[in-house]
Amino acid sequence: MRECSPLSRRALLGLAAAAVPLTATTPASAAGARSAGTSVVGGERLGLGGVQVRAAGLPRKLTAAAWLVADRDTGEVLASFNAHRRLAPASTLKMLFADTVLPKFDPTTRHRVTEADLADIPSGSSLVGVQAGTTYTVEQLWRGVFLRSGNDAVHVLAHLNGGVARTVAEMQARAEYLHALDTHVVSPDGFDHKGQISSAYDLTLFARAGLENPDFRRHCGTRTADFPAGGKKTFQIQNTDRLLTGAFGLTPYPGLLGVKNGYTSHAGNTFTGAATRGGRTLLVTVMHPTEGSNAVYEQTAALLDWGFGPGRAAQPVGQLAAPGGTNGSHPTVSPVPERKPAHADATTPGPSALRLTEGAAGTAALLGAGAWALLRRRRASTAGAPAEAVPRQGGRRRAARTTEAPAEVPQQGGRRRARPTETPAEAPQQGGRHRR
Image 1 (cartoon, helix red, strand yellow):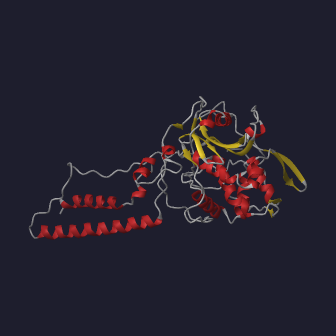
Image 2 (image 1 turned 90 degrees about the vertical axis):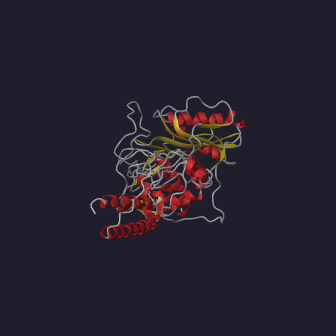
Image 3 (image 1 turned 60 degrees about the vertical axis):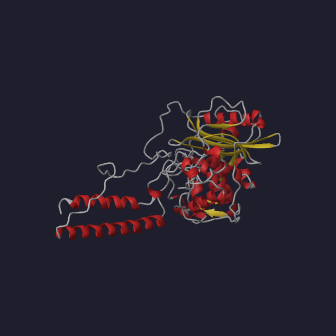
Protein backbone atom coordinates (compact mmCIF):
# COMPACT_ATOMS: atom_id res chain seq x y z
CA MET A 1 0.00 0.00 0.00
CA ARG A 2 2.80 2.47 0.78
CA GLU A 3 4.40 1.75 -2.58
CA CYS A 4 1.28 2.32 -4.64
CA SER A 5 -0.16 5.35 -2.79
CA PRO A 6 2.40 7.94 -3.99
CA LEU A 7 2.05 6.68 -7.54
CA SER A 8 -1.70 6.95 -7.31
CA ARG A 9 -1.50 10.52 -6.06
CA ARG A 10 0.67 11.46 -9.03
CA ALA A 11 -1.74 9.76 -11.38
CA LEU A 12 -4.67 11.62 -9.86
CA LEU A 13 -2.81 14.94 -10.12
CA GLY A 14 -2.14 14.22 -13.76
CA LEU A 15 -5.81 13.46 -14.32
CA ALA A 16 -6.80 16.70 -12.64
CA ALA A 17 -4.33 18.72 -14.73
CA ALA A 18 -5.66 17.14 -17.91
CA ALA A 19 -9.18 18.28 -17.05
CA VAL A 20 -8.32 22.00 -16.69
CA PRO A 21 -10.01 23.99 -19.52
CA LEU A 22 -7.56 25.01 -22.23
CA THR A 23 -8.72 28.64 -22.05
CA ALA A 24 -7.26 28.86 -18.56
CA THR A 25 -3.78 27.69 -19.53
CA THR A 26 -3.17 28.48 -23.18
CA PRO A 27 -1.80 31.94 -24.06
CA ALA A 28 -3.40 33.65 -27.03
CA SER A 29 -1.45 34.49 -30.16
CA ALA A 30 -2.08 35.48 -33.74
CA ALA A 31 -0.46 32.23 -34.87
CA GLY A 32 -2.86 30.25 -32.70
CA ALA A 33 -5.84 32.10 -34.16
CA ARG A 34 -4.71 31.37 -37.71
CA SER A 35 -4.02 27.71 -37.02
CA ALA A 36 -7.57 27.41 -35.70
CA GLY A 37 -8.86 28.76 -39.02
CA THR A 38 -9.67 32.24 -37.72
CA SER A 39 -8.59 35.20 -39.86
CA VAL A 40 -6.94 38.21 -38.28
CA VAL A 41 -9.39 41.11 -38.08
CA GLY A 42 -8.57 43.52 -40.89
CA GLY A 43 -6.38 41.11 -42.84
CA GLU A 44 -3.60 38.62 -42.25
CA ARG A 45 -0.80 41.16 -42.72
CA LEU A 46 -2.06 43.17 -39.76
CA GLY A 47 -1.45 40.16 -37.54
CA LEU A 48 2.25 40.18 -38.40
CA GLY A 49 4.89 42.01 -36.41
CA GLY A 50 6.96 44.79 -37.91
CA VAL A 51 6.19 47.43 -40.52
CA GLN A 52 3.52 46.58 -43.09
CA VAL A 53 3.50 48.96 -46.08
CA ARG A 54 3.40 48.91 -49.88
CA ALA A 55 4.91 52.31 -50.62
CA ALA A 56 8.12 54.22 -50.04
CA GLY A 57 8.95 57.28 -47.99
CA LEU A 58 7.83 56.32 -44.49
CA PRO A 59 9.18 58.62 -41.77
CA ARG A 60 12.50 57.33 -40.47
CA LYS A 61 12.20 58.21 -36.80
CA LEU A 62 9.22 56.20 -35.58
CA THR A 63 9.85 54.87 -32.09
CA ALA A 64 6.29 53.94 -31.12
CA ALA A 65 5.50 50.41 -29.94
CA ALA A 66 2.60 50.37 -32.42
CA TRP A 67 1.09 52.69 -35.03
CA LEU A 68 -1.39 52.67 -37.89
CA VAL A 69 -2.41 54.91 -40.82
CA ALA A 70 -5.84 54.46 -42.43
CA ASP A 71 -8.19 56.21 -44.82
CA ARG A 72 -11.28 57.16 -42.87
CA ASP A 73 -13.70 56.96 -45.82
CA THR A 74 -12.55 53.75 -47.49
CA GLY A 75 -11.28 52.04 -44.35
CA GLU A 76 -8.07 51.02 -46.13
CA VAL A 77 -5.07 50.58 -43.85
CA LEU A 78 -2.19 52.23 -45.70
CA ALA A 79 0.61 51.26 -43.31
CA SER A 80 1.00 49.80 -39.84
CA PHE A 81 3.44 48.59 -37.24
CA ASN A 82 2.24 45.97 -34.74
CA ALA A 83 -1.36 46.90 -35.52
CA HIS A 84 -2.89 44.34 -33.16
CA ARG A 85 -0.35 44.58 -30.36
CA ARG A 86 -2.24 44.91 -27.08
CA LEU A 87 -1.13 47.88 -24.99
CA ALA A 88 -2.52 50.10 -22.25
CA PRO A 89 -4.67 52.74 -24.00
CA ALA A 90 -4.76 55.47 -21.31
CA SER A 91 -7.38 58.16 -22.00
CA THR A 92 -7.69 57.30 -25.70
CA LEU A 93 -10.19 54.70 -24.43
CA LYS A 94 -12.50 57.66 -23.78
CA MET A 95 -13.21 57.59 -27.52
CA LEU A 96 -15.02 54.28 -26.98
CA PHE A 97 -16.77 55.73 -23.91
CA ALA A 98 -18.03 58.70 -25.93
CA ASP A 99 -19.00 56.60 -28.94
CA THR A 100 -21.04 54.38 -26.59
CA VAL A 101 -22.70 56.92 -24.27
CA LEU A 102 -22.75 60.27 -26.12
CA PRO A 103 -25.84 59.50 -28.27
CA LYS A 104 -27.93 58.57 -25.22
CA PHE A 105 -28.51 61.95 -23.56
CA ASP A 106 -29.89 65.28 -24.70
CA PRO A 107 -27.03 67.80 -24.37
CA THR A 108 -29.33 70.27 -22.60
CA THR A 109 -30.19 67.80 -19.80
CA ARG A 110 -29.17 69.25 -16.42
CA HIS A 111 -27.73 67.23 -13.55
CA ARG A 112 -26.84 68.27 -10.00
CA VAL A 113 -23.69 66.33 -9.11
CA THR A 114 -23.63 64.36 -5.86
CA GLU A 115 -20.75 63.02 -3.78
CA ALA A 116 -21.72 59.52 -4.91
CA ASP A 117 -21.13 60.52 -8.54
CA LEU A 118 -17.51 61.29 -7.68
CA ALA A 119 -16.84 58.54 -5.15
CA ASP A 120 -15.09 55.98 -7.36
CA ILE A 121 -12.64 58.18 -9.31
CA PRO A 122 -9.14 56.62 -9.25
CA SER A 123 -6.55 58.48 -7.21
CA GLY A 124 -4.23 60.55 -9.41
CA SER A 125 -6.80 60.96 -12.16
CA SER A 126 -6.95 63.90 -14.54
CA LEU A 127 -9.79 66.19 -13.45
CA VAL A 128 -11.66 69.04 -15.07
CA GLY A 129 -12.97 70.34 -11.74
CA VAL A 130 -16.50 68.94 -11.34
CA GLN A 131 -17.88 69.82 -7.91
CA ALA A 132 -20.56 68.07 -5.89
CA GLY A 133 -23.57 70.31 -5.38
CA THR A 134 -23.10 72.13 -8.71
CA THR A 135 -25.50 71.65 -11.62
CA TYR A 136 -24.06 70.94 -15.07
CA THR A 137 -25.58 70.33 -18.47
CA VAL A 138 -24.65 67.11 -20.26
CA GLU A 139 -23.02 69.31 -22.90
CA GLN A 140 -20.70 70.85 -20.30
CA LEU A 141 -19.76 67.45 -18.91
CA TRP A 142 -18.81 66.22 -22.37
CA ARG A 143 -16.60 69.27 -22.83
CA GLY A 144 -14.84 68.23 -19.64
CA VAL A 145 -14.32 64.75 -21.10
CA PHE A 146 -13.06 65.79 -24.52
CA LEU A 147 -11.08 68.92 -23.71
CA ARG A 148 -9.55 68.14 -20.30
CA SER A 149 -9.93 64.34 -20.29
CA GLY A 150 -11.62 64.77 -16.92
CA ASN A 151 -12.22 61.47 -15.17
CA ASP A 152 -14.59 63.30 -12.84
CA ALA A 153 -16.80 64.21 -15.82
CA VAL A 154 -16.56 60.63 -17.12
CA HIS A 155 -17.76 59.16 -13.84
CA VAL A 156 -20.68 61.58 -13.53
CA LEU A 157 -21.82 60.62 -17.04
CA ALA A 158 -21.30 56.93 -16.26
CA HIS A 159 -23.56 57.27 -13.19
CA LEU A 160 -26.16 59.00 -15.36
CA ASN A 161 -25.88 55.98 -17.65
CA GLY A 162 -26.75 53.55 -14.86
CA GLY A 163 -23.39 53.14 -13.18
CA VAL A 164 -19.78 52.27 -13.94
CA ALA A 165 -20.39 48.51 -14.22
CA ARG A 166 -23.21 48.95 -16.72
CA THR A 167 -21.19 51.46 -18.73
CA VAL A 168 -18.18 49.13 -18.88
CA ALA A 169 -20.42 46.30 -20.11
CA GLU A 170 -21.90 48.55 -22.79
CA MET A 171 -18.45 49.69 -23.89
CA GLN A 172 -17.30 46.08 -24.19
CA ALA A 173 -20.38 45.24 -26.25
CA ARG A 174 -19.78 48.27 -28.46
CA ALA A 175 -16.16 47.22 -28.98
CA GLU A 176 -17.34 43.80 -30.14
CA TYR A 177 -19.86 45.40 -32.48
CA LEU A 178 -17.02 47.42 -34.04
CA HIS A 179 -14.87 44.23 -34.23
CA ALA A 180 -12.35 45.73 -31.83
CA LEU A 181 -11.42 42.35 -30.39
CA ASP A 182 -8.07 43.42 -28.91
CA THR A 183 -9.86 45.63 -26.40
CA HIS A 184 -10.74 44.65 -22.85
CA VAL A 185 -12.53 47.37 -20.87
CA VAL A 186 -12.09 47.61 -17.10
CA SER A 187 -13.07 51.25 -16.49
CA PRO A 188 -14.77 53.91 -18.60
CA ASP A 189 -12.00 56.49 -18.14
CA GLY A 190 -8.99 54.59 -19.50
CA PHE A 191 -7.03 54.97 -16.27
CA ASP A 192 -4.39 52.32 -15.52
CA HIS A 193 -6.13 49.15 -14.41
CA LYS A 194 -4.83 45.60 -14.60
CA GLY A 195 -6.09 43.98 -17.80
CA GLN A 196 -7.29 47.18 -19.50
CA ILE A 197 -5.89 46.93 -23.02
CA SER A 198 -6.48 47.96 -26.61
CA SER A 199 -4.47 48.25 -29.84
CA ALA A 200 -3.64 50.74 -32.56
CA TYR A 201 -6.14 48.97 -34.81
CA ASP A 202 -8.95 49.13 -32.25
CA LEU A 203 -8.35 52.76 -31.27
CA THR A 204 -8.55 53.68 -34.95
CA LEU A 205 -11.89 51.85 -35.17
CA PHE A 206 -13.18 53.86 -32.19
CA ALA A 207 -12.11 57.16 -33.75
CA ARG A 208 -13.66 56.28 -37.08
CA ALA A 209 -16.98 55.30 -35.48
CA GLY A 210 -17.04 58.32 -33.17
CA LEU A 211 -16.44 60.80 -35.98
CA GLU A 212 -19.69 59.65 -37.58
CA ASN A 213 -21.47 61.53 -34.77
CA PRO A 214 -21.60 65.33 -35.33
CA ASP A 215 -21.50 65.99 -31.57
CA PHE A 216 -18.40 63.80 -31.22
CA ARG A 217 -16.70 65.71 -34.05
CA ARG A 218 -17.65 69.07 -32.56
CA HIS A 219 -16.35 68.22 -29.10
CA CYS A 220 -13.04 66.68 -30.17
CA GLY A 221 -12.33 69.66 -32.42
CA THR A 222 -13.12 72.32 -29.79
CA ARG A 223 -10.02 74.21 -28.62
CA THR A 224 -11.36 76.17 -25.62
CA ALA A 225 -14.60 76.38 -23.64
CA ASP A 226 -16.01 77.89 -20.46
CA PHE A 227 -16.68 75.47 -17.62
CA PRO A 228 -18.88 76.06 -14.52
CA ALA A 229 -17.01 76.97 -11.33
CA GLY A 230 -20.07 77.14 -9.05
CA GLY A 231 -22.76 79.76 -8.88
CA LYS A 232 -22.58 81.93 -11.97
CA LYS A 233 -18.79 81.74 -12.24
CA THR A 234 -16.91 79.94 -14.99
CA PHE A 235 -13.30 79.26 -15.91
CA GLN A 236 -11.76 78.51 -19.28
CA ILE A 237 -10.56 75.03 -20.21
CA GLN A 238 -8.28 74.23 -23.15
CA ASN A 239 -8.09 71.06 -25.21
CA THR A 240 -5.07 68.95 -24.26
CA ASP A 241 -4.58 67.85 -27.91
CA ARG A 242 -1.37 69.71 -28.75
CA LEU A 243 -1.69 69.18 -32.50
CA LEU A 244 -5.02 70.99 -32.29
CA THR A 245 -3.98 73.89 -30.06
CA GLY A 246 -0.27 74.24 -30.78
CA ALA A 247 0.63 74.05 -27.08
CA PHE A 248 4.11 73.18 -25.77
CA GLY A 249 5.90 74.57 -28.80
CA LEU A 250 4.06 72.52 -31.44
CA THR A 251 2.55 73.99 -34.59
CA PRO A 252 -1.17 73.21 -35.00
CA TYR A 253 -1.59 70.59 -37.71
CA PRO A 254 -3.49 71.94 -40.76
CA GLY A 255 -6.89 70.35 -41.19
CA LEU A 256 -6.82 68.47 -37.87
CA LEU A 257 -10.26 67.28 -36.71
CA GLY A 258 -9.21 65.90 -33.30
CA VAL A 259 -9.41 63.17 -31.92
CA LYS A 260 -8.03 62.07 -28.49
CA ASN A 261 -4.75 61.94 -26.61
CA GLY A 262 -3.82 59.99 -23.52
CA TYR A 263 -1.03 59.74 -20.98
CA THR A 264 -0.31 57.84 -17.78
CA SER A 265 2.98 57.08 -16.08
CA HIS A 266 2.43 53.38 -16.80
CA ALA A 267 1.11 53.58 -20.36
CA GLY A 268 3.19 56.47 -21.60
CA ASN A 269 1.79 58.64 -24.41
CA THR A 270 -0.87 57.53 -26.88
CA PHE A 271 -2.73 59.55 -29.50
CA THR A 272 -5.27 59.06 -32.26
CA GLY A 273 -5.59 61.96 -34.68
CA ALA A 274 -7.68 62.67 -37.78
CA ALA A 275 -6.99 65.30 -40.42
CA THR A 276 -8.48 66.31 -43.77
CA ARG A 277 -6.54 67.55 -46.80
CA GLY A 278 -7.54 67.68 -50.44
CA GLY A 279 -10.86 65.99 -49.76
CA ARG A 280 -9.22 63.02 -48.04
CA THR A 281 -9.43 62.25 -44.30
CA LEU A 282 -6.76 60.13 -42.65
CA LEU A 283 -6.70 58.48 -39.24
CA VAL A 284 -3.42 57.89 -37.42
CA THR A 285 -2.88 56.12 -34.10
CA VAL A 286 0.49 56.18 -32.33
CA MET A 287 1.03 54.19 -29.11
CA HIS A 288 3.86 54.37 -26.59
CA PRO A 289 6.81 56.08 -28.33
CA THR A 290 10.05 55.66 -26.43
CA GLU A 291 10.41 59.42 -25.97
CA GLY A 292 8.05 61.47 -23.88
CA SER A 293 6.53 64.94 -24.21
CA ASN A 294 5.85 65.90 -27.84
CA ALA A 295 7.05 62.70 -29.57
CA VAL A 296 3.59 61.13 -29.87
CA TYR A 297 2.30 64.25 -31.66
CA GLU A 298 5.40 64.67 -33.84
CA GLN A 299 5.24 61.06 -35.01
CA THR A 300 1.49 61.39 -35.68
CA ALA A 301 2.12 64.52 -37.76
CA ALA A 302 4.91 62.76 -39.68
CA LEU A 303 2.62 59.82 -40.51
CA LEU A 304 -0.16 62.18 -41.59
CA ASP A 305 2.30 63.99 -43.87
CA TRP A 306 3.32 60.64 -45.35
CA GLY A 307 -0.31 59.63 -45.87
CA PHE A 308 -1.13 62.87 -47.67
CA GLY A 309 2.08 62.61 -49.68
CA PRO A 310 3.80 59.35 -50.71
CA GLY A 311 1.03 57.36 -49.02
CA ARG A 312 -1.41 58.38 -51.74
CA ALA A 313 0.21 55.74 -53.95
CA ALA A 314 0.22 53.07 -51.22
CA GLN A 315 -1.59 49.82 -51.83
CA PRO A 316 -3.59 48.84 -48.72
CA VAL A 317 -2.14 46.27 -46.33
CA GLY A 318 -5.42 45.76 -44.50
CA GLN A 319 -8.91 47.06 -43.88
CA LEU A 320 -10.76 48.69 -41.00
CA ALA A 321 -13.65 46.36 -40.23
CA ALA A 322 -17.15 47.64 -40.90
CA PRO A 323 -19.36 47.75 -37.78
CA GLY A 324 -21.95 45.10 -37.07
CA GLY A 325 -22.41 41.39 -37.62
CA THR A 326 -24.24 39.13 -40.01
CA ASN A 327 -27.59 40.04 -38.45
CA GLY A 328 -26.85 43.77 -38.32
CA SER A 329 -27.70 43.89 -34.62
CA HIS A 330 -26.30 46.63 -32.40
CA PRO A 331 -25.60 45.28 -28.90
CA THR A 332 -25.89 47.79 -26.09
CA VAL A 333 -25.41 45.75 -22.93
CA SER A 334 -23.54 42.51 -22.38
CA PRO A 335 -21.37 40.92 -19.69
CA VAL A 336 -17.63 40.80 -20.29
CA PRO A 337 -17.50 38.13 -22.99
CA GLU A 338 -15.51 34.97 -23.37
CA ARG A 339 -12.27 35.90 -25.04
CA LYS A 340 -12.15 35.30 -28.76
CA PRO A 341 -8.97 34.11 -30.51
CA ALA A 342 -6.64 37.02 -29.98
CA HIS A 343 -3.75 38.69 -31.69
CA ALA A 344 -0.10 38.72 -30.78
CA ASP A 345 1.50 40.00 -27.56
CA ALA A 346 -1.36 39.40 -25.16
CA THR A 347 -2.51 37.20 -22.34
CA THR A 348 -6.16 36.33 -22.26
CA PRO A 349 -8.39 36.95 -19.25
CA GLY A 350 -9.52 33.91 -17.28
CA PRO A 351 -11.96 31.35 -18.63
CA SER A 352 -15.68 31.88 -18.56
CA ALA A 353 -17.84 30.50 -15.78
CA LEU A 354 -19.28 27.97 -18.20
CA ARG A 355 -15.85 26.65 -19.13
CA LEU A 356 -14.83 26.51 -15.48
CA THR A 357 -17.96 24.51 -14.76
CA GLU A 358 -17.20 22.17 -17.62
CA GLY A 359 -13.63 21.79 -16.41
CA ALA A 360 -14.74 21.12 -12.86
CA ALA A 361 -17.16 18.46 -14.05
CA GLY A 362 -14.46 16.83 -16.14
CA THR A 363 -12.04 16.92 -13.24
CA ALA A 364 -14.59 15.31 -10.93
CA ALA A 365 -15.29 12.54 -13.44
CA LEU A 366 -11.62 11.78 -13.97
CA LEU A 367 -10.88 11.84 -10.24
CA GLY A 368 -13.77 9.46 -9.71
CA ALA A 369 -12.36 7.11 -12.34
CA GLY A 370 -8.94 7.31 -10.70
CA ALA A 371 -10.37 6.50 -7.30
CA TRP A 372 -12.22 3.49 -8.74
CA ALA A 373 -9.02 2.22 -10.36
CA LEU A 374 -7.14 2.67 -7.08
CA LEU A 375 -9.79 0.66 -5.23
CA ARG A 376 -9.45 -2.18 -7.75
CA ARG A 377 -5.68 -2.21 -7.28
CA ARG A 378 -5.99 -2.36 -3.53
CA ARG A 379 -8.38 -5.33 -3.79
CA ALA A 380 -6.02 -7.07 -6.20
CA SER A 381 -3.09 -6.46 -3.85
CA THR A 382 -5.01 -7.92 -0.91
CA ALA A 383 -5.75 -11.03 -2.97
CA GLY A 384 -2.03 -11.48 -3.67
CA ALA A 385 -2.18 -10.48 -7.34
CA PRO A 386 0.66 -8.27 -8.63
CA ALA A 387 -0.24 -4.62 -9.01
CA GLU A 388 -0.85 -3.45 -12.59
CA ALA A 389 2.06 -1.41 -13.90
CA VAL A 390 1.41 2.20 -14.78
CA PRO A 391 3.24 3.15 -18.00
CA ARG A 392 5.61 6.12 -17.84
CA GLN A 393 6.50 7.64 -21.18
CA GLY A 394 10.10 8.77 -21.39
CA GLY A 395 10.94 7.73 -17.83
CA ARG A 396 10.08 9.62 -14.67
CA ARG A 397 6.79 11.52 -14.66
CA ARG A 398 7.00 15.24 -14.18
CA ALA A 399 4.34 17.62 -13.00
CA ALA A 400 2.76 19.57 -15.84
CA ARG A 401 3.77 23.22 -16.10
CA THR A 402 1.86 26.04 -17.65
CA THR A 403 3.42 29.11 -19.17
CA GLU A 404 1.73 32.33 -20.09
CA ALA A 405 2.77 35.04 -22.49
CA PRO A 406 3.89 38.19 -20.68
CA ALA A 407 1.08 40.69 -20.31
CA GLU A 408 1.36 43.84 -22.37
CA VAL A 409 -0.32 45.94 -19.72
CA PRO A 410 2.10 47.47 -17.20
CA GLN A 411 0.88 46.47 -13.74
CA GLN A 412 -0.03 48.83 -10.94
CA GLY A 413 2.76 49.68 -8.60
CA GLY A 414 5.61 50.06 -11.10
CA ARG A 415 6.63 52.61 -13.71
CA ARG A 416 7.51 51.74 -17.30
CA ARG A 417 10.75 53.66 -17.30
CA ALA A 418 11.94 56.79 -15.62
CA ARG A 419 11.95 59.75 -17.96
CA PRO A 420 13.71 62.58 -16.10
CA THR A 421 13.35 65.01 -19.00
CA GLU A 422 9.77 64.20 -19.83
CA THR A 423 7.30 67.05 -19.80
CA PRO A 424 3.92 66.04 -18.35
CA ALA A 425 1.36 65.58 -21.10
CA GLU A 426 -0.92 68.24 -19.70
CA ALA A 427 -0.75 71.03 -17.18
CA PRO A 428 -2.29 70.28 -13.76
CA GLN A 429 -5.91 71.23 -13.28
CA GLN A 430 -7.75 71.92 -10.09
CA GLY A 431 -8.59 68.83 -8.09
CA GLY A 432 -5.50 66.69 -8.63
CA ARG A 433 -2.60 65.65 -10.86
CA HIS A 434 -3.17 65.19 -14.57
CA ARG A 435 -2.28 61.73 -15.84
CA ARG A 436 -3.41 60.46 -19.22
